[in-house]
Image 1 (cartoon, rainbow, N blue to C red):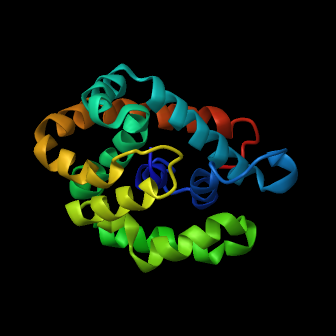
Image 2: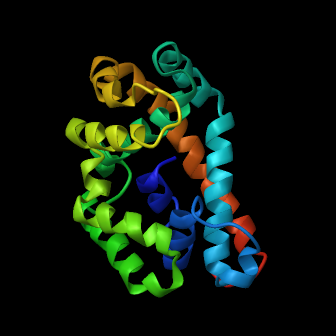
Length: 201
């Protein structure tokens, strides 16, 4: 999943949020580098990604994209799911998406000394362009997918994926609606399991 889903699936634990955000930016012995709750967040991030990648509904959604986007179908599906989470945020949380995004940005800025520089470089643009809110718009999707396409090793056509979203929004929303409640339940149970390792949450 992409940044908004990882933030939401941290369930308001600040240090878990930090780890959930940097899961793709860190390597090596995590326990030597980070606070136990941040390690929990990193491990939760990776468990969420694996669960998402292997879920049958997500695989079905990817089949819809593969004829056009081939190996990048999984990446695009992740971004689409953040679009639906942001756009329909009020179905999942009592706070506004704007309020939630500001809380996330504030948590990261308060703890920037704990986070790797490669993530903080990206975070500068995330906050400046308010990605977590912008994900819920077609223009935000276009910007996000075009940005990712510039870093792909092969021709991805991701710069057109926002148009595919517009044309297939109803069907893709159906996949999201079928998948996301499963992911929420999985993440809650996995966080409880991981936190028992150090009993600090």
